[in-house]
Image (spheres, rainbow, N blue to C red):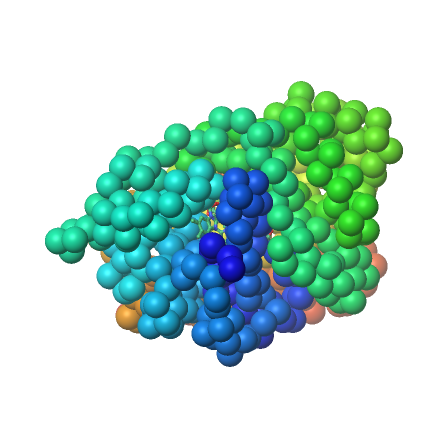
Length: 464
Ligand code: B12
Ligand code: SF4
């Protein structure tokens, strides 16, 4: 008889795009919560939805013999399934607790659609206090349980005081990877990409203020685990799952250089060298020693949030990085044998055709190994959302949408940004082909020019 069932609303079978990419990772947050609670004598089961179906989850809920408390992880992608799973669980008599970044941004909306409690911030300590409180007092008298939002007996939404963040991450157990079929993820990676991968984090929170970025869970603090604590987890992962690579899912892996050097030394001392990918910021990569260290540790690819090639737009975003830093960091990383992935964003507030042109020129000059574009969307409770709040339009019902569906009145059409994408890809490809195949390069340049014309046409259409 278990005390708690944890799950989430992400089903790979329902995500056609991701099924093509096939780079799924376990829900680390849930596994942290599970590990912490188990360490305190709570018996927890995790139903990992990633490789399962809704029908299977339904069967698990209907057949559940333990205490009827269901905890669900929420993020920006899973609103609809979470609302549906919560409703189904409620109908079966469960008390439903939500955690993660999405429900933290919309507690009232989720509570009005059947959730009993929304946990804000880190889930470990709050859940440890919440579970006995639920058993003793039920879901409507949770006053004083820090870090929770609930509905009281008079139907009022009550937000309890925030819970202080966990000061010492080394005191936390490793995420409970054995609670789910972690090996299945490694296997999927190996079958589709030739290399099995496992995710882990070395820190929580990011102190930077990029104004479209959600800080709903960890705020603006930055807390790091000690190098020895992380290296020991890597050893455990290696011994248990034998991955070919790791994914350090930190916000900014190279944020503290001293820590990075110490961590590299710790790995070396233990004879650990597992290739890995991670994310960072260009301004935290501006030293040869940092890049040499990353390369020495086995970093095969680093992702940089480059966002725009227009300094004006970067400054508007409060990104705190210059275009030239991104240029330097990209080239320097590649010089050290590390591939560079770039995230780019179209359509940030005030972006002009000249800014788009600057981004294209920037990507062409920097030459990342891979890049992805998104059209900017304001996530609730971010500076960007507040900036455009008066113009945010949601054309669907809240439960059918995500924050990615936020349209900004007055902004260009989807077609406009598709042309921007085509312009970017053709121009970058033309640049790459310049030496090896001048004819192909000329064809790509012509394609870029057509895409530019189409973009200008789409802009005029919108204005007409
Ligand atoms: C790594 C990562 C990715 C990877 C995913 C691979 C992976 N899973 O490792 C990649 C790069 C593919 C990715 C993609 C996207 N991501 Co992402 N990602 C992250 C990142 C950096 C780390 C996730 C992580 O492992 N966190 C560590 C764990 C420990 O934290 P946690 O999950 O929040 O869990 C804690 C609490 O939330 C809570 N908790 C969690 N579950 C539960 C459950 C219960 C019941 C309770 C009580 C508590 C609780 O307790 C946990 C421990 O304290 C986060 C930012 C961050 N630092 O968390 C963004 C983040 C989650 N991603 C975000 C976004 C927007 C996206 C994309 C939509 C981006 C895009 N434009 O495409 C896509 C969506 C992909 C998808 N299908 O879901 C946003 C989500 C915002 C929101 N409001 O939901 C975040 C917060 C980034 C940001 N700062 O804006 N992402
Ligand atoms: S985008 Fe990256 S660097 Fe900027 S605030 Fe978010 S996590 Fe930090």
